[in-house]
Every structure is written in structure tokens, then in C-alpha cells.
Image 1 (cartoon, rainbow, N blue to C red):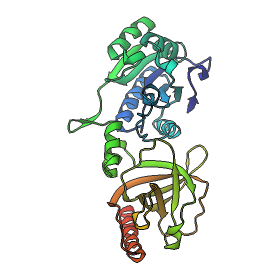
Image 2 (tube, rainbow, N blue to C red; image 1 turned 90 degrees about the vertical axis):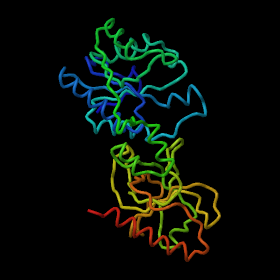
Image 3 (tube, rainbow, N blue to C red; image 1 turned 90 degrees about the horizontal axis):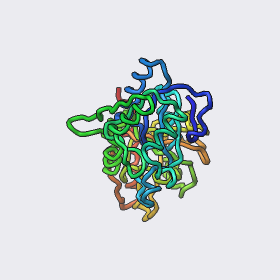
Image 4 (tube, rainbow, N blue to C red; image 1 turned 135 degrees about the vertical axis):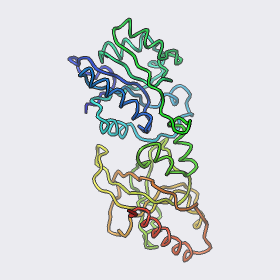
Length: 316
């Protein structure tokens, strides 16, 4: 898959293509549904599929400080889209200047002039251009002007509820990582670099990888979880994975105040991951965070948590 940093990075000899547009944060099942429609169109037309997406999140530029927690990094977004069979991703730097492009100017400068769109496939609620003035109806009108067709895809919903990034964020904030996994189509991942913490876990017999998470990361509610610790290469591809018990919170037993994400790879005390980029995949919540009266009580509960995590991760 090709990855372009803005329209000017598109090769000059790029031909006709099927294009879909969106933030695609999380590349959840609703996004996958739209990409599936784009790929169906590409098969009909014999053309490649291009995803146009944005970084940073538009809210941070238009309303600084309102940046929503992100379900995945821009790099992981591209990897997930590649797994869906997308041929190219064009990541546009979202700036105030770019936000002022009118709908016609956006369509001409991005979709027509650089990507040579033959068909544009978007969610039926898609908005584009300055002050979100463009909708699917206007996109169809501009398609007649610039000789492409536009398709608005009905949003994917279950039990009358649309699958959305905001809905997944709410589930993570409540600690419901299983429901988030259902909507994402995979476990939610938090990425970061492994740094040295207080190293209490090692002293207690449960050495953990302490993550320095990336800004604006969507981190599940405080608690203890079962999941996976994943070592990543410089491009974000998976190198190794281990079943893990995961702690999110402030570690109240030791009166700490900093919120951390720590993962213990089950039965492994030989891993040296300091400085490595890793992901932590959340599959199930085991319990809420508790303050224990003694270290012995904490260790006893940690043994229970590890056992619960092992049973969940090896079931079936």
C-alpha cells in the first residue's frame, strides 16, 4: 500500500481511482463497511481505492483543547486500512488554511486534480469543506461538474444504534472494553514506549511494562484487564505478542497520583522492553481498581487477577 503525505505527494502519473474520505479514527466496523463499498466499486471499475484522511484531528485545529481521545494513531490507521485492501492512503495535514477551503475547492484540488476520482464513496452523513458546508447531495452535484459519481453509504447500525468512534470512546471510558472490541472488530490498542516506573511489579513478582502513552490516547477506565502485550517494529508492525494482565490507574495502595498503563506478560520475567514501542490490546475487564490494606493483600489479589486473565485468554 502507498502512503502519501498530502495531495502533492500523489505521483504525477496517478490515474483514475475510487476515493473515500473521512477521519477513520479506529477504523471500526462502520468504517470497514464504507471501505467495503469502495472496494466493491473499485472491482466494478477496475480501479484502485484511495482513502483520504486527516492528521491532526480537525477538532484540535478548529477548537483547540477539544481534541477527542484517539482510538488509534495515524500510523496504525494506515496499517489497518492496508489490511482492508486499500491501495493508497492520503494523509492530509489539517490546518486552519486547509479548513477554509470551500467544498468546490476541496473537491477540485484533492479529489479531482490529484486523485482523479471516478467515484467517491462516503458515509451518508459525510460533511466536507469550510464550515462543513458540503454534504452528499452537493458532492453528487460537484460530481456532475467534474465527471465523477458519488455514493452515500448508509451508516452501519445494530439494534438501532449507529457504530461510531464517539460511541466506542464512551464504552472505553466506562471500562467496557468487550463492547468496544465488538464495535471495532478487534481489541482496542493503546500504544506507547516502555519506560522505567517505580519497578514495584518486579519486586512483587509481576514485572510490568510501563507505557509512556501518546498524547490524546483513548485509555480505558481505571481497572484491571486481560489482554495482550505486543512488541512493535519502527513501522508499527507486530513482532511478538504475549498474553497479559493489564493495570490502568494510579496504584492507590501506594498512594500514587500519576495514572499509568502497565502490562504484565503472563509467566514472563525475562523480557527487557525498555525503550521499545509496544501496544497493549484490551479484551476484558477483570475488576475495578482497589486500595489494599497491605502489600500481601495486593499480591494475593494480583495472583487471582493473573489466573483470571490466563483463563480468559486461553479459553477455547
